[in-house]
Image (cartoon, rainbow, N blue to C red; front, side):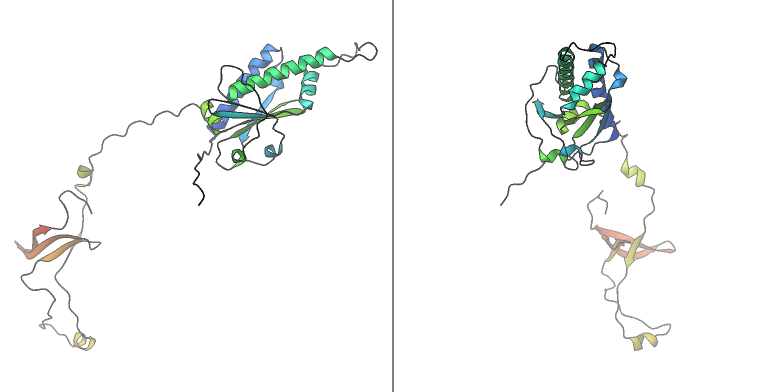
Length: 269
């Protein structure tokens, strides 16, 4: 017999998606300011991990975790090249001497990319410090419907990479919902006191043949299954018994006298 395994089921609203995008955009803006780049050069798009299958097929080559929250990065080898081209655009008036390569520009781009990835992981994991990276694989449950995970796609120019946040990481970035106002106390008994209720009193039943029924005439007597001095049952319209009662008269109207209750006092059926 296999053990029962339970997991949280989180269907993320647009508010959660916006909150994560805002947090990542703030990290990107701080990074662009540090490196002298325009924030508009980097675009951030966030979607639920189970929407589509393209992100699942990516090579998730970096992972990190902190305080029960986990995040992963999928960064291709062309990302640093694209960042270098954005940071150090080619200058036709200058060329390297002989066969020299612009090693300084490449090193600067790698350093800038490393700083960006650290900033994104800190933000994704709600950490104040850099989180060590590892090559942990992404659990298959992250892609399941209702996992609570989000995928962010960051693009600059034609180059892009992805960040995956698991459910606890997303929840840490979503502000808590405002508490609902307390409901006003309602006096239920007073609210239903004037609601009319129909009651049913059955004096008895009889079984007669069809022939006898067809021959009945005014003045004939049909014997019921109740004795004349036996209490009758006063019931709700759904036939739930409420009281024993005796049939009688009040002034010029037929009435009943209640003698025993079927329902505890104050209980509504």
